[in-house]
Length: 326
Image (cartoon, rainbow, N blue to C red; front, side, top):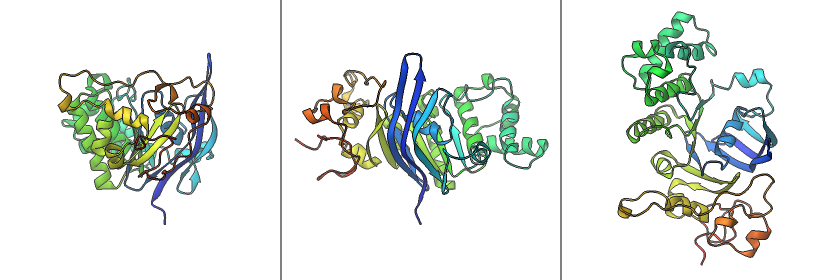
Protein backbone atom coordinates (compact mmCIF):
# COMPACT_ATOMS: atom_id res chain seq x y z
CA UNK A 1 0.00 0.00 0.00
CA UNK A 2 1.25 3.48 -0.90
CA UNK A 3 2.48 5.66 1.97
CA UNK A 4 1.35 8.81 0.12
CA UNK A 5 -1.31 10.65 2.13
CA UNK A 6 -1.80 13.66 -0.17
CA UNK A 7 -1.20 13.88 -3.90
CA UNK A 8 -1.47 17.03 -6.01
CA UNK A 9 -1.43 16.47 -9.76
CA UNK A 10 -1.29 18.88 -12.71
CA UNK A 11 -2.63 21.82 -10.68
CA UNK A 12 -3.08 25.05 -12.63
CA UNK A 13 -4.57 28.13 -10.97
CA UNK A 14 -5.28 31.52 -12.53
CA UNK A 15 -6.27 34.75 -10.79
CA UNK A 16 -8.57 37.33 -12.36
CA UNK A 17 -7.28 40.85 -11.67
CA UNK A 18 -8.05 44.34 -12.96
CA UNK A 19 -4.80 44.26 -14.92
CA UNK A 20 -5.65 40.90 -16.48
CA UNK A 21 -5.06 37.23 -15.66
CA UNK A 22 -2.21 35.96 -13.48
CA UNK A 23 -1.20 32.32 -13.93
CA UNK A 24 -0.13 31.47 -10.39
CA UNK A 25 0.62 27.76 -10.85
CA UNK A 26 1.09 25.76 -14.04
CA UNK A 27 0.47 22.02 -13.97
CA UNK A 28 2.38 21.41 -10.75
CA UNK A 29 2.50 18.01 -9.07
CA UNK A 30 3.84 16.81 -5.71
CA UNK A 31 3.20 14.13 -3.09
CA UNK A 32 3.22 14.25 0.70
CA UNK A 33 4.04 10.97 2.43
CA UNK A 34 2.96 9.69 5.83
CA UNK A 35 4.92 11.32 8.67
CA UNK A 36 6.88 13.51 6.25
CA UNK A 37 7.64 17.22 6.25
CA UNK A 38 7.56 18.41 2.63
CA UNK A 39 8.70 22.00 2.08
CA UNK A 40 7.48 24.09 -0.85
CA UNK A 41 10.24 26.68 -1.23
CA UNK A 42 10.55 29.81 -3.34
CA UNK A 43 10.46 33.59 -3.40
CA UNK A 44 7.26 35.53 -2.71
CA UNK A 45 4.95 35.21 -5.70
CA UNK A 46 6.30 31.83 -6.77
CA UNK A 47 2.93 30.11 -6.23
CA UNK A 48 3.64 28.28 -2.95
CA UNK A 49 0.66 29.55 -0.97
CA UNK A 50 -1.66 29.20 -3.95
CA UNK A 51 -0.66 25.56 -4.26
CA UNK A 52 -1.19 24.97 -0.54
CA UNK A 53 -4.50 26.80 -0.23
CA UNK A 54 -5.84 24.94 -3.27
CA UNK A 55 -5.72 21.69 -1.29
CA UNK A 56 -8.64 22.69 0.95
CA UNK A 57 -10.21 25.08 -1.58
CA UNK A 58 -9.34 28.11 0.51
CA UNK A 59 -8.48 30.30 -2.48
CA UNK A 60 -10.13 33.74 -2.83
CA UNK A 61 -13.10 34.22 -5.19
CA UNK A 62 -10.94 35.69 -7.94
CA UNK A 63 -8.96 32.44 -8.22
CA UNK A 64 -9.91 29.84 -10.81
CA UNK A 65 -8.64 26.26 -10.83
CA UNK A 66 -8.03 25.50 -14.51
CA UNK A 67 -6.91 21.90 -14.08
CA UNK A 68 -5.71 19.44 -11.50
CA UNK A 69 -6.58 16.88 -8.90
CA UNK A 70 -5.94 16.72 -5.15
CA UNK A 71 -6.18 13.13 -3.91
CA UNK A 72 -6.72 12.41 -0.20
CA UNK A 73 -8.07 9.11 1.10
CA UNK A 74 -9.14 8.06 -2.44
CA UNK A 75 -11.10 11.29 -2.91
CA UNK A 76 -10.45 14.28 -5.16
CA UNK A 77 -10.81 17.23 -2.80
CA UNK A 78 -11.33 19.61 -5.72
CA UNK A 79 -14.44 17.67 -6.77
CA UNK A 80 -16.05 17.14 -3.34
CA UNK A 81 -19.33 18.74 -2.36
CA UNK A 82 -18.92 21.50 0.22
CA UNK A 83 -20.55 19.41 2.96
CA UNK A 84 -18.15 16.51 2.39
CA UNK A 85 -15.16 18.84 2.31
CA UNK A 86 -16.15 20.36 5.66
CA UNK A 87 -15.80 16.95 7.30
CA UNK A 88 -12.15 16.92 6.19
CA UNK A 89 -11.19 20.59 6.51
CA UNK A 90 -9.97 21.25 10.05
CA UNK A 91 -10.60 17.67 11.15
CA UNK A 92 -8.30 15.56 8.99
CA UNK A 93 -6.39 18.32 7.18
CA UNK A 94 -5.79 21.56 9.06
CA UNK A 95 -4.02 24.82 8.33
CA UNK A 96 -1.65 27.13 10.20
CA UNK A 97 -1.84 30.51 8.49
CA UNK A 98 1.03 32.92 7.94
CA UNK A 99 -0.13 35.81 10.13
CA UNK A 100 -1.10 34.39 13.53
CA UNK A 101 -2.91 37.51 14.73
CA UNK A 102 -4.86 38.01 11.50
CA UNK A 103 -5.73 34.31 11.54
CA UNK A 104 -7.65 34.68 14.80
CA UNK A 105 -10.96 36.49 15.31
CA UNK A 106 -10.17 39.76 17.13
CA UNK A 107 -13.56 40.00 18.91
CA UNK A 108 -13.74 36.44 20.30
CA UNK A 109 -11.67 35.29 23.27
CA UNK A 110 -8.93 32.73 22.69
CA UNK A 111 -10.68 30.08 24.77
CA UNK A 112 -13.96 30.48 22.88
CA UNK A 113 -12.15 30.24 19.54
CA UNK A 114 -10.45 26.98 20.51
CA UNK A 115 -13.73 25.64 21.95
CA UNK A 116 -15.61 26.61 18.78
CA UNK A 117 -13.17 24.69 16.61
CA UNK A 118 -13.61 21.60 18.79
CA UNK A 119 -17.42 21.83 18.83
CA UNK A 120 -17.58 22.14 15.06
CA UNK A 121 -16.27 18.58 14.72
CA UNK A 122 -16.98 16.83 18.03
CA UNK A 123 -20.23 16.27 19.99
CA UNK A 124 -19.16 18.38 22.99
CA UNK A 125 -21.12 20.63 25.29
CA UNK A 126 -19.88 24.21 25.75
CA UNK A 127 -18.50 23.33 29.17
CA UNK A 128 -16.70 20.23 27.86
CA UNK A 129 -15.26 22.22 24.96
CA UNK A 130 -14.03 25.00 27.24
CA UNK A 131 -12.33 22.53 29.57
CA UNK A 132 -10.74 20.74 26.64
CA UNK A 133 -9.59 24.04 25.17
CA UNK A 134 -7.43 24.61 28.26
CA UNK A 135 -5.68 21.29 27.60
CA UNK A 136 -5.16 22.33 23.99
CA UNK A 137 -3.45 25.55 25.12
CA UNK A 138 -1.26 23.61 27.57
CA UNK A 139 -0.28 21.17 24.82
CA UNK A 140 1.43 23.93 22.83
CA UNK A 141 3.52 25.14 25.75
CA UNK A 142 1.44 28.10 26.92
CA UNK A 143 1.46 28.86 30.63
CA UNK A 144 -1.29 30.48 32.71
CA UNK A 145 -3.83 29.03 30.28
CA UNK A 146 -6.80 30.37 32.24
CA UNK A 147 -5.60 33.91 31.57
CA UNK A 148 -4.75 33.15 27.94
CA UNK A 149 -8.19 31.62 27.37
CA UNK A 150 -9.88 34.82 28.60
CA UNK A 151 -7.60 37.03 26.50
CA UNK A 152 -8.20 38.41 23.00
CA UNK A 153 -5.63 38.05 20.20
CA UNK A 154 -4.44 41.68 20.48
CA UNK A 155 -3.54 41.03 24.13
CA UNK A 156 -1.07 38.27 23.22
CA UNK A 157 2.31 38.36 21.51
CA UNK A 158 2.77 37.08 17.96
CA UNK A 159 4.49 33.96 19.25
CA UNK A 160 1.64 33.21 21.66
CA UNK A 161 -0.94 33.69 18.92
CA UNK A 162 1.01 31.33 16.69
CA UNK A 163 0.98 28.72 19.44
CA UNK A 164 -2.78 29.15 19.70
CA UNK A 165 -3.07 28.63 15.94
CA UNK A 166 -0.98 25.48 16.20
CA UNK A 167 -3.16 24.29 19.07
CA UNK A 168 -6.34 24.79 17.02
CA UNK A 169 -4.76 23.11 14.01
CA UNK A 170 -3.62 20.06 15.99
CA UNK A 171 -6.38 19.66 18.57
CA UNK A 172 -8.20 17.03 16.51
CA UNK A 173 -5.07 15.05 15.55
CA UNK A 174 -5.27 15.69 11.81
CA UNK A 175 -3.38 13.48 9.41
CA UNK A 176 -2.05 16.49 7.47
CA UNK A 177 -1.12 20.03 8.53
CA UNK A 178 -0.56 22.78 5.98
CA UNK A 179 1.79 25.33 7.57
CA UNK A 180 1.92 28.49 5.46
CA UNK A 181 5.03 30.48 6.48
CA UNK A 182 4.34 29.71 10.17
CA UNK A 183 7.44 31.52 11.46
CA UNK A 184 7.90 34.46 9.08
CA UNK A 185 6.55 37.12 11.48
CA UNK A 186 8.41 35.82 14.55
CA UNK A 187 11.82 36.57 16.05
CA UNK A 188 14.46 33.88 15.81
CA UNK A 189 13.99 32.60 19.35
CA UNK A 190 10.23 32.09 18.98
CA UNK A 191 10.79 30.74 15.46
CA UNK A 192 13.01 28.01 16.86
CA UNK A 193 10.35 27.11 19.44
CA UNK A 194 7.60 26.89 16.80
CA UNK A 195 9.75 24.72 14.53
CA UNK A 196 10.49 22.46 17.48
CA UNK A 197 6.76 22.09 18.09
CA UNK A 198 6.13 21.14 14.46
CA UNK A 199 8.91 18.58 14.65
CA UNK A 200 7.38 17.18 17.84
CA UNK A 201 4.01 16.81 16.12
CA UNK A 202 5.56 14.83 13.31
CA UNK A 203 7.55 12.67 15.70
CA UNK A 204 4.91 12.05 18.39
CA UNK A 205 1.75 11.89 16.30
CA UNK A 206 3.02 10.89 12.86
CA UNK A 207 1.52 14.03 11.37
CA UNK A 208 2.40 14.84 7.76
CA UNK A 209 3.26 18.51 7.25
CA UNK A 210 3.20 20.57 4.07
CA UNK A 211 5.47 23.50 4.96
CA UNK A 212 5.36 26.68 2.87
CA UNK A 213 8.47 28.83 3.23
CA UNK A 214 10.95 31.02 1.42
CA UNK A 215 13.64 30.25 4.00
CA UNK A 216 16.09 27.43 3.31
CA UNK A 217 17.35 27.81 6.87
CA UNK A 218 13.93 26.66 8.11
CA UNK A 219 13.94 23.86 5.53
CA UNK A 220 17.29 22.59 6.78
CA UNK A 221 15.94 22.33 10.34
CA UNK A 222 12.69 20.42 9.82
CA UNK A 223 12.08 19.19 6.25
CA UNK A 224 12.54 15.70 4.85
CA UNK A 225 11.78 16.54 1.22
CA UNK A 226 11.77 19.76 -0.80
CA UNK A 227 9.96 21.03 -3.89
CA UNK A 228 11.39 24.30 -5.24
CA UNK A 229 8.90 26.63 -6.95
CA UNK A 230 9.60 29.47 -9.33
CA UNK A 231 7.04 31.56 -11.24
CA UNK A 232 4.28 29.00 -10.77
CA UNK A 233 6.39 25.96 -11.69
CA UNK A 234 8.02 23.25 -9.59
CA UNK A 235 11.53 23.24 -10.96
CA UNK A 236 13.35 20.79 -8.65
CA UNK A 237 12.44 18.14 -6.09
CA UNK A 238 14.48 15.93 -3.80
CA UNK A 239 15.42 15.14 -0.24
CA UNK A 240 16.61 17.96 1.96
CA UNK A 241 20.16 16.57 1.84
CA UNK A 242 20.10 16.47 -1.96
CA UNK A 243 18.93 20.06 -2.13
CA UNK A 244 21.49 21.36 0.34
CA UNK A 245 24.44 19.31 -0.88
CA UNK A 246 23.85 19.07 -4.64
CA UNK A 247 21.37 21.69 -5.88
CA UNK A 248 20.85 21.26 -9.63
CA UNK A 249 18.65 24.07 -10.89
CA UNK A 250 20.40 27.45 -11.17
CA UNK A 251 17.52 29.01 -9.22
CA UNK A 252 17.91 26.58 -6.32
CA UNK A 253 21.62 27.26 -6.32
CA UNK A 254 20.94 31.02 -6.26
CA UNK A 255 18.46 30.66 -3.38
CA UNK A 256 21.02 28.79 -1.29
CA UNK A 257 23.66 31.39 -2.08
CA UNK A 258 21.48 34.07 -0.42
CA UNK A 259 21.61 32.32 2.97
CA UNK A 260 23.66 34.20 5.59
CA UNK A 261 26.86 32.30 6.47
CA UNK A 262 29.23 32.66 9.39
CA UNK A 263 32.25 32.49 7.07
CA UNK A 264 30.84 35.49 5.14
CA UNK A 265 30.69 37.79 8.17
CA UNK A 266 31.24 41.40 7.18
CA UNK A 267 30.33 40.82 3.54
CA UNK A 268 27.17 41.99 1.80
CA UNK A 269 24.38 39.42 1.55
CA UNK A 270 24.03 37.81 -1.86
CA UNK A 271 20.90 38.52 -3.91
CA UNK A 272 19.39 37.00 -7.04
CA UNK A 273 19.67 39.64 -9.77
CA UNK A 274 16.60 40.66 -11.76
CA UNK A 275 12.95 39.99 -10.98
CA UNK A 276 10.46 37.17 -11.53
CA UNK A 277 8.71 37.16 -14.93
CA UNK A 278 5.30 38.49 -15.90
CA UNK A 279 2.69 35.79 -15.24
CA UNK A 280 -0.09 37.24 -17.40
CA UNK A 281 0.10 34.25 -19.73
CA UNK A 282 1.48 30.70 -19.54
CA UNK A 283 5.22 30.54 -20.12
CA UNK A 284 6.33 29.47 -23.59
CA UNK A 285 9.94 29.10 -22.43
CA UNK A 286 11.88 28.62 -19.20
CA UNK A 287 10.58 31.27 -16.76
CA UNK A 288 14.05 31.74 -15.24
CA UNK A 289 15.85 32.80 -18.45
CA UNK A 290 16.12 36.52 -17.57
CA UNK A 291 17.97 35.72 -14.33
CA UNK A 292 19.88 32.57 -15.27
CA UNK A 293 23.68 32.58 -15.68
CA UNK A 294 23.58 29.31 -17.68
CA UNK A 295 20.81 30.11 -20.19
CA UNK A 296 21.02 28.47 -23.63
CA UNK A 297 19.05 29.00 -26.86
CA UNK A 298 16.79 26.02 -26.14
CA UNK A 299 15.80 27.64 -22.82
CA UNK A 300 14.52 30.70 -24.71
CA UNK A 301 12.55 28.72 -27.26
CA UNK A 302 10.99 25.84 -25.34
CA UNK A 303 9.43 25.18 -21.94
CA UNK A 304 11.66 23.37 -19.42
CA UNK A 305 11.97 19.61 -19.84
CA UNK A 306 9.76 17.37 -17.67
CA UNK A 307 10.67 17.21 -13.99
CA UNK A 308 12.87 14.11 -14.00
CA UNK A 309 16.45 13.07 -13.23
CA UNK A 310 18.91 13.62 -16.05
CA UNK A 311 21.71 11.31 -17.11
CA UNK A 312 23.88 12.19 -14.11
CA UNK A 313 21.42 14.01 -11.86
CA UNK A 314 20.73 12.66 -8.39
CA UNK A 315 17.12 13.91 -8.28
CA UNK A 316 14.42 15.43 -10.56
CA UNK A 317 15.10 18.83 -12.09
CA UNK A 318 13.35 20.78 -14.85
CA UNK A 319 16.37 22.32 -16.52
CA UNK A 320 18.24 21.86 -19.82
CA UNK A 321 21.52 22.94 -18.27
CA UNK A 322 21.60 22.04 -14.56
CA UNK A 323 24.40 23.20 -12.32
CA UNK A 324 26.36 19.93 -12.36
CA UNK A 325 27.07 20.29 -16.09
CA UNK A 326 30.01 22.26 -17.34
